Length: 148
Image 1 (cartoon, rainbow, N blue to C red):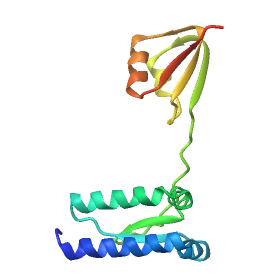
Image 2 (image 1 turned 135 degrees about the vertical axis):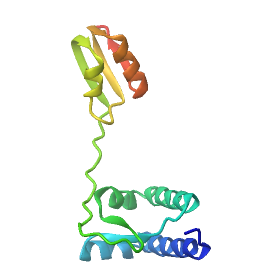
Image 3 (image 1 turned 120 degrees about the vertical axis):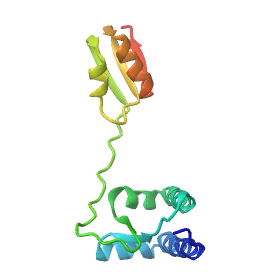
């Protein structure tokens, strides 16, 4: 599966689809006939890396990014057969802050924080276990103590 012809075909298909998205043709087709499907073939690490770069380039445009996030643009593997429909991705919850006023914060409490939490605000009376502190560091969550 390390065929340069396949890699070239992927490049052409993605270039064509990106061109449609930039001119708005892809959006009209997606609105009228369901999700826009981009067929891709990934046979090696280099092709996978190329695909990731192209998806990142697509995500740079807000409307295209929204289509990717909501499932209006979907990817299918070339030659793959499937019996189930592709379900749109649920939008990621963008939680940035969580507030805790009192009590003891444990590792389990940290694990139950919503995905996307970037910062927690804790009250003066909140104590944290060492494992909770470790888990917060692992998840890259900053802690700000409210001294009032």
